[in-house]
Image (cartoon, rainbow, N blue to C red; front, side):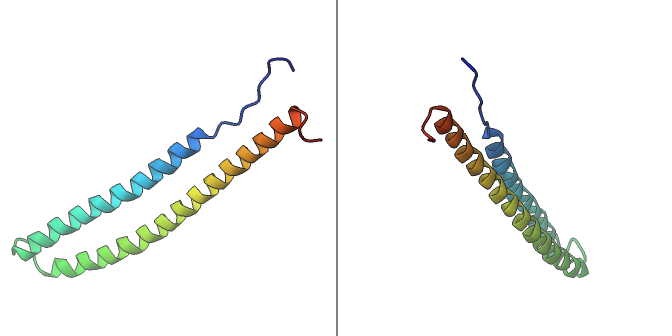
Length: 103
């Protein structure tokens, strides 16, 4: 095995975790902006006030579903971190064993 290297690369998992976290922030900001603008139209009398009731129901629904999605993403990110840790520990153990330290 002269010159051969086995490498466990898990950098892509960091990218996935940061992207999903960024998406969570973005969709909440977008919804908050839409909700605020629509409520502003209602307050100005430009849109029928009965729409406000429906909008509040949709806001509650969004918050519930977003919370479920956020919990799912958090669990997924935790699982990816666990995979990274296991991979790193396994890699260290293989290097240690290959260098004769595991005896």
